[in-house]
Image (cartoon, rainbow, N blue to C red; front, side, top):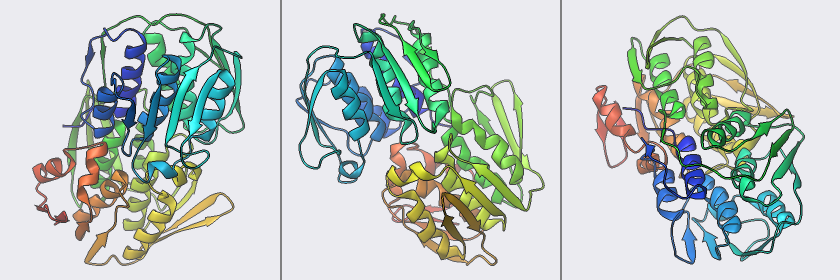
Amino acid sequence: MLPASKSISNRALIINALAGGKSDLRNLSDANDTQLMLRLVNSTDGIIDVEDAGTTMRFLTAYFLVTHQHKILTGAPRMKERPIGILVDALRLLGGEIKYLENEGFPPIEIKKFTGQKTNTIRIRGDVSSQYISALMMVAPMLPSGLTLILEGKVGSRPYIEMTASLMKHFGAQCNLQDNEVIIPHQSYKAEPFTVESDWSAASYWFAFTALAEKAEINLPKLLNNSLQGDSAIVGIMDSLGVKSIFENDLLTLSKKESKRELHWDFTHCPDLAQTVAVVCAAKNIKGYFTGLESLRIKETDRIKALQHELRKIGADLIEDAGKWTLIPSINLTKTASFSTYRDHRMAMAFAPLATLMDVTIEEPEVVRKSYPNFWNDMKSFGFTIQPTASVLK
């Protein structure tokens, strides 16, 4: 059973809180990131520990400021290395008093007070993290003069911005999203019932299992063909990597097909798929030509470095040259390999499908709790043997 989308769940929780907390939210994600948000958005504690949840850190920073809550936001060691300066700069321009408690531009931060709106127009880079933009969008209706966001440069992960706009509209807030401009007037959210759809990011790993297995047919429930989620792009990507997708009602059936020799893909709008796709290409001897991986450097780990290191264990490599990456596939896979996760849930789940071809050890397997707590149990249901101490998969 796929988990619900944590991206949609976390946005719904923030908007619901801004609407007075009375909406009937159904099928919220059981991912740790969402459970943190559920607990922290209404917390009366002065110190808020978001652990390793980047979305939670960024969304709550904007939320606590505009709702006039004095808070200290902190997190895990890696969270203190993940930048938040662009969002803080924008909130300061709006009239927020926010203080860095350790390193300039990084958590922990102290949200002191919102002195009143000083501007209704903010220019913000579009190529670093869409979460900064979404955080500002969701609180914009609460600002007395509304807000116009001008997105400068290349806009990355645009489907997540469109997701935020769609959810705002569901809860009664007008949001005019143009090419490089977002216009949001002052208004009120309304409580509305809402059901969260299944998570396409989680589904991507089952595409990988299908691509790598000798034979496979997998049914995935409650996935929308016209999804809000950018990671639904996995359908098109995996069509080139040997996976046929058929939608029938709310059921998606995956099966085998012929794969291509090369894959050219721009991950600008779906960066969370890059690790999974890289591993499949490496194992299937498919050469990859990738762009749009820049944001991977500021995720739970530097995912580019992590991928390069771990792919070499199976004789593959990811070579960077002037903002472009070439995936050199493996010629002969090893019979066994142990993969580090770098405390990154997507590293664990991206390499796990190699268990269709070899014995795999995933170090720190518990990291999947961040987005897909039942991942190992779901693998067991497909016949894989899991040894819990290090998740040895056969």
